[in-house]
Length: 280
Image (cartoon, rainbow, N blue to C red):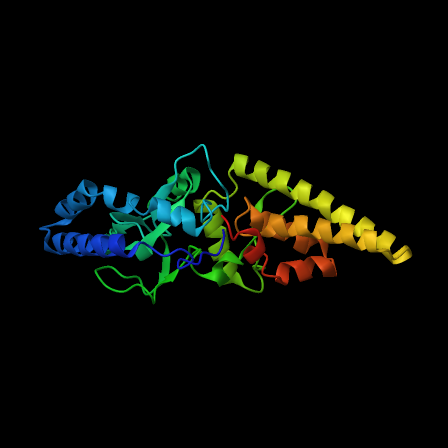
């Protein structure tokens, strides 16, 4: 999962105004619908609405799935309703009505690859302050981690074998651990192909880290400008691998953290996006 700055790319003002007016009209239709069946029909009949935002959501994340941090050039991206629009499956697998009033609300849209969105489906567990009818949801204490909340994205880490794991220890931070566990399961973040892709990225970054460590050792034994230049060039390659626009950048960041090297932590603290992602 990657942190998303929804304001990184601005919507075209004319389109934004047009779509906003359309959303207001559709919300009014939902509010005036006779029953759930009628509401669901309004949603189904206007499913093209949220698809209008797909290209914008792709630009915001450098064409990457917000949940898996992966680029899927050969698969269809979905515009996921973070809070399901028609039906919700609770933590205990019971069902309730969906967040129909958010069906055409842009703030409820997330860009998802087909695998995470297919597994997620209508799952959306709420621990406290569940909203059961039209109203604001800001006080809901939810299980899913949200890519729009930077601190949430830090609760998932990755290992050398490519697997996604919970960052927070269950004994110290049980609630954060449970949220990460739920997210990994219902976004299918350990999908076999995804795990394999992460493992490949980890191996490449590991080789790069090893080269840098070897060159630093050489430099400490014989200080030369050429060795320093070589080290700087290798570090630039690391910067490219951890930039937000890079496929599976979060995996490469985890690999750098796992190295335990001071220089690696310094790279992680830099704003590498400005240089490496400005033209993407």
